[in-house]
Image: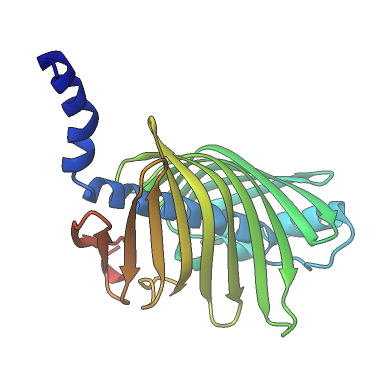
Amino acid sequence: MSIASLLLAAAACGPAESEDESVDVEQALDALDVSQHEAALVVASIARLDPKSAYPDLAAVKAAATAGLVFRPTDCVTATRKDNTVKYLLSGCIGPFKTANLDGTFDVVFSVGASGLHALASARDLHASRAILDIDSEGFYSLDADGETRRLVVEASGEGVGPRGHRIERAGSYTVTWNATEKCVTFDGDWETIVGARAFHTVVSGLARCAGECPAAGGEIVHEKKALDIHIRITFDGSARATWSSSRGQSGTIPLFCGAGS
């Protein structure tokens, strides 16, 4: 093999073998955080509504009228309604699940389908905690058979900058369930994550947390590199650090933005 061929082979294989996968872990967590902040906004728009509502215009009327009960303090939000659309203007708000420092505008268009009430949310350059969101997502809102558990299934797309500074593109879906009394939420998702020219398949399962707290023990993220037999598993133990390991033998821990210090 010629020297030129050897150099080309090294360029093709070397970085993939020696890459510091802690960066991939950061990107997986940024994709999760962007999705959770997005979910909080969609939940805010439907939190006071009847999942079985058959009238999108009336849903919009109630959503606009109750915005001050969902975002805190009451005067941090201005909600204006036209037909079945509500435009929210946020300034320093705290939203559902204690999502803080919400600044910007987002629109929600309500409709009704076989699965229940739909909320089509869109936003550009909306700030949420340490993240920046561009949203084009549709949520399907329903009530579970127990009459207490709310369920929101979101078909998500759009971009965002996570709290660790990575710009993330996402396309896929996630499901949020919560009990309004307990103020706790569970999160499961499956989406494609794109960071620059790199593509991943990200699956979140069994992630549970209560407002203002760190993820409970038992949840995990599996972050797979497309076209390569490589995956990274991130697990949570209830603390402000997550543990990760790679199929290539790398491992470590990473701090989370949660709990009293978040």
